[in-house]
Amino acid sequence: MNSVTLSLARQLLGFNTINPPGDEAGCMAFFAGWLQEQGFDVMLRSFGEKRFNLIARITGSQPGLPLAFTGHLDTVPLGNQGWQFDPFGADVTEDRLYGRGSSDMKAAVAAFAVACVVHQKTLRAGTGVVLIITGGEETGCDGAKALIDAGDLPETGALIVGEPTANYPVIGHKGALWLRCETRGKTAHGAMPELGINAIYLAAEALGKIQHFEPGAPHPLMKKPTLNVGRISGGLNINSVPDQTQFDVDIRTAPNLQHATIRQNLTTALGNTVTISTLVDLPAVLSEAENNWITHVYRRCQPLHARPVEAKIVPYFTDASLLLPALGNPPCVILGPGEPAMAHQTDEYCLLIRLAQAETLYGELLTDWQVMQ
Image (cartoon, rainbow, N blue to C red; front, side, top):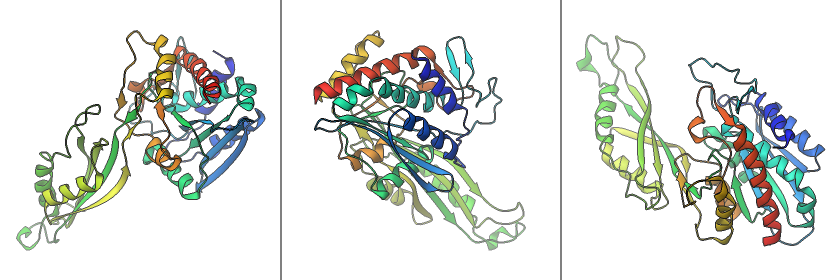
């Protein structure tokens, strides 16, 4: 592995970019400066206080669309469990790089950035490369939305998303539909509940129904859609009848399902005592496994895996949900050195061997793309 890759990954991990509350400013400024020093043309864009996206280019001299990489620099919170390793210390112990965001997904960002630098001469003689680096991904792709709304996205021929896959090429992921369900009642004294309408009881009835709600039919590759109630709140004090309750629903879907239909069906199932609003609406992603470029990616990845590489998806969402439609739906693979099981975990780490493999793999795909054009 190029020592620069590990050094860059450790520097990125040293920045606290936990979201919420969200603060990519320092990390993005550092990375923008690093990329400029390496010869990239860099555009840094704010989408809120301390919130930033970045687009970097190495422009080629040949006609044709560039290959694009995307990754996010925000991370999830640390959780309540204590860490053995400093989450911002970027500790290297034996075969692992520790830190919040090591697997998800700052190590991948370092790997593809360095791969571009190593192969910069080839890229300039070909069709070039684009890096789309976002903030706000963890809370619903807020940074990607801002890039799209601003019209800042360049044309690309294919997209590699560096999310954690242990260097296994993945051609899609489930969609995410996050809904807020609200019940409203009538407040009264807790000693005279018959004078009120208890919103918690209304929510309990709705929750009983939602356990049996089916979002839709299974998908051949993504299987059954899932539904989870992840949060509930209601009531202000113990001696009053609560007049408002909210619970949030996380539904993961597939390309065969329409989110508007799911929401309407859920509204009908829960009845008129529940009001539903949408928090996040991200479509599923699925590229054609038979696409020439994707089959080529499979061949490049095969030596890293004992079993034949086959079409797979992941359950989590990525910025590709929004980026792909905005880019004209080019072929896309999710491919990163991080361990999927380590994403969002205490003492998160990325294996150094995976990081080295990813740097080499990204470099091969970059040079291959120039020839394939």
